[in-house]
Image (cartoon, rainbow, N blue to C red; front, side, top):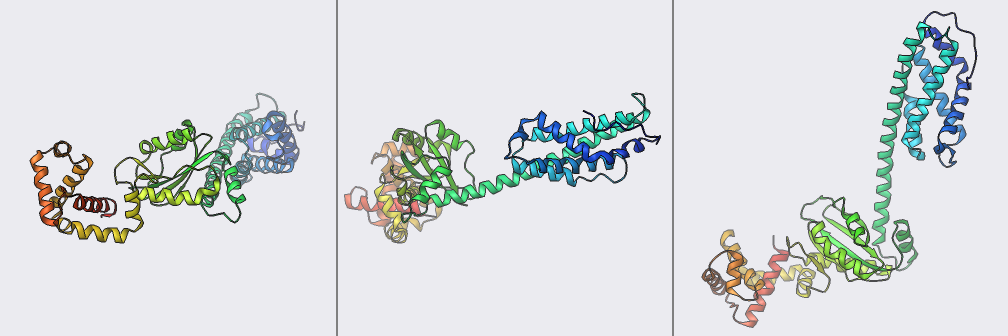
Length: 397
């Protein structure tokens, strides 16, 4: 459908052919709205754009394009940026945005040809090039604004989701409905098996791997994560305890840091208590061990990190002379003691682990005995040395 059938203009310039379109721009906008709505189902949803908003957007963009085409005004992209922003906010697909510009360009071209002297009118050649350059320019500006708005909205959504996840770990014992609402909003089940994960990162500011949530989902567990500068807290949710176990076992391969896992639970009201367990378990993990420490699996370590000042004081009283040695010698002695305990008191196995002779291990253990007055052969002395060693490993600089 053509908007108007005006007689050809007598102006012999291309600009003179374009300028009269402004007199019909409102009717052109109405026709463009009809074409857009008929060609794209995206605009049939009343939740996206109202008819009035679409009409105003078409009128503003057609006016700006025709004014630039006729040389009345310089190219002004305010209307293009505004419609790009509006359609991003309303969720109109970007393909629909670009299609609308193509329809607008086609309508303007139909009007120009209708007002020309015929297909051979030399003015049409110059106008065609300029018109489609303008359509490209306006489309690019609209898309750029659309993308910028998408990024802004995604950032706002991410912040809102982050705040919601953070409230999930708060104590809502006075109103459990808050926890259930947060779970529903985040897409997690309100019932099933849950566990809380705490990760203390080795690199402050490091983000979680982008594939983490998907990998855990493949193992049968949904998850949401709250990230801080030096730690990450996650809630695992599944219909079966087995999926929680599979996900927990995979965490050490998926992320770096000290990883702690709470005991599994079935009531969402237990989340705050499970968070305390997970954090304690994470602090009980040996740095660089690449294992997941489950709450309750390392009771001595839990005790040491619960009272760190007292634990460190005991460690320095027991291993003080060793800790005061120059770093290379200190590390050799601590390493030998650690390997000896890890190998269940086997000097030969400890030597193999340390890549040295077994006599070297024996020498280093005797050196510890001489410095501390505590012999690994004595059960009481050995318990004290082991306790101090764990404290140094977990709490040392």
